[in-house]
Length: 332
Image (cartoon, rainbow, N blue to C red; front, side, top):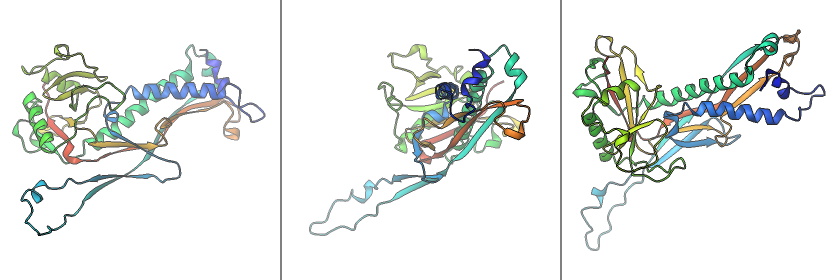
C-alpha cells in the first residue's frame, strides 16, 4: 500500500468524510489491535469486565464468601432451632485510566518514504500499547500479598542467584492453591476446546532456562495427549500449564548482593480481572490527523500525526488466595 493512502483517511473540503475513510480507519484499528494482542499474556487470563458508557470510571467486583462447614458439622439437636449464620461478601473496586502515544509525520516524509508510514506506525503503536497494558496487568498481579520465597528464604532481599525456580517450588504452590480451593481453568475460557483442568504459571525466559535443568521437567513434546495449547505455552506438569512471557515481572537488584529477583505467577480461574470501557472491542483506537488539520497551529501543512489511545483500562486482584507469586533468583 503506497504512502499516499494517507489521503483516504482525510476529511473532504466540505467537512464530510471521504467514502473510504471509515474503511481505512477500521483497517488501521484492526492492525493496531492485532499487534497489541500479540503482547497479551498477563492480560489474557483474567476475568473480563467492561464499563458501559455513562457509568463512571470505577468498577466493582463482588464475591460471596464460603460458609464454614464446621458450623454445620455438629448436627442438629432435636426440636432446637440452631443460630443462623451470616452471609459474607468481599468487594474489590478498581478505577480505569487512559493511555496513549503518537508520532508526527512530516509532509516531506509522507511524500518520499519507501514504506507505508501510517500502516507501520499503527503496528509499532499497537506493540507499544499492548506492552503497556501487559505491564499494567503484570504489576497489579505482582503486588499481591500471597508470596512464596524460593529455597526456604523469608524475604526478597535474602534471595540470591542460586535460589532458582524448581519443580518442587511449583508443587508447593499447587498444594497451597488446592488448599485455598482455587478454581482451575479448563481451556474453554477464551473459546478454546476443553482440556484437563489446570492452573496457569507465567514465567520469564530466564526462569524457563532454570526449570529445564530440573530433572522433573516435562517438555511440551512429551505430552501424552494432544490437547490444544495456549499461545506461548511451553509445558505442563503437576496440574500447571507454563506460559512464557518476556514481560514477566523482575525486581531488578532487589535480592542479596543486588541480585535480580524474578516473579513467577501461578493462579487459578477468576483470581484477577481486567477492566475496560465498552465491550472490549474498542479498548484501543487509532487516531489519524491529516496534514493541515491543526489549522493555524500548522500554517504550512507540514505535520500529520498517527496516534493510538487506550480509552480506559486497569486490572485488579479478585482473590488473593488464588494468585501466588513465587519470588526467586535466576542463574547466569
